[in-house]
Image 1 (tube, rainbow, N blue to C red):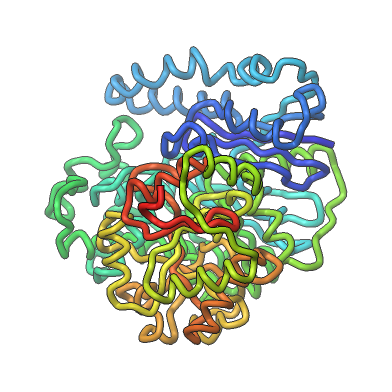
Image 2: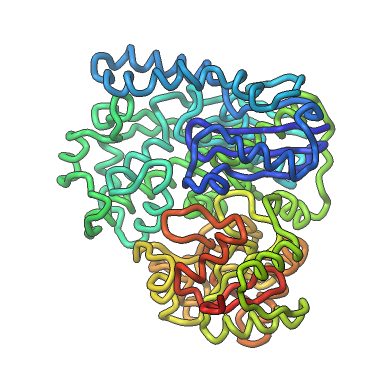
Length: 570
Ligand SMILES: [Fe+2]
């Protein structure tokens, strides 16, 4: 049975195709449109999923859209009435988009997928998040927590899941949102909402949570069960394009930081305070959920689950024995989530859990576009690009040596990753042992804010030697304490942590073998892994985009399949 899922019209549009519940193709629209965080109808992503799987629309059994647009529209109208006349400009901007397009998504889907005759369903937004986290987990039963900005009305939900069923029993509703609380600080500290939250997380490591009490006393009321109530006198997001108002600025004694102005200590301290508040609330929530459910497994979903620092605290200090975070907890990931809901819950299909979770990790992640060896060869020949071809073992040895000699190496292999992170197939790799490598990477390629750390990939079996963590972190969504920072300074953040990806032979054998070769040379089972993109653009998709990395940046070389291409070799 083929089921298609899609998400769009908020941010991170995406499409995913499942065959009998297994993801066989999934990709974000931005990878084709080259518009970062593209929120448009995911037509190229849908077309690619069908082409990749060699099926036509009439072969699709059913389609799932990741939320209920009518309920969302109802919330928008309700909100504008409640805040009127304040939200007039926002109203005039937003409502036509809904009336002309978003409410008619069903027609748009049918127009795009001519020949499709099946049913289209619209699960609730948080149900799609819940489905993505539960059905990518190794658990037969689990408590569920989803936290984001907002779906239709819900901003946080919890419940339980067992076999193929999910029940979300409790929620917190708009405008009281932990995600939007964090996004308000993201905006206030000079970053883009829905995009810059991870920058705020990185920046917060440089500060002290001096404003924790100020925030708790004024901005947010938190109950022992983790339920929250925002003091809307300080927030503007219900009626304006900005997130916070003058009262919010007065509270902290500074104006919102402009994105191009220098971050000062006060910004770091405000960031650290917001981060701590977020973590403390999440801990209250998971304690409450544990009390209520008495379960040992927890699946977390929604955009807030991208906060790896908070995930680590839930893991270390929370009451659950096991936690799971899916490869793509945000709205993009819901394209898979809503299709999983459609297959398992709506169609009531039996769930079979892969006994080796590393295999499930591979199947959850490496499901995007790829190019064959012939395609790569033809591309290189057509462009007269000089390259050296190696067999597998030679390639691994040569690449590991290049990295250990402090070259910055592009690694373009197999299928593109699902989700926001490059996990060893569309990655830029470098040596983590060097103190200066972070600056070199920033100067030569990434040009990003100095407070943002680079992430490590580590052979799974060495994880607890280097990090204070005893579970795999295959999707790079947990930030753990580094145990031996002196050995891997380039991936150790200022607060002594690293946002690690654990790699096993089953989850990605080529990447695992490459790190193993690096380990043989250096004694360090870790590489720097950063996504292959130039600043402001999505991760590379095509061969041309990958090749342009050594044209446009100072990357030293790129490995495409079995072929090594040096910068200047064109
Ligand atoms: Fe969401």
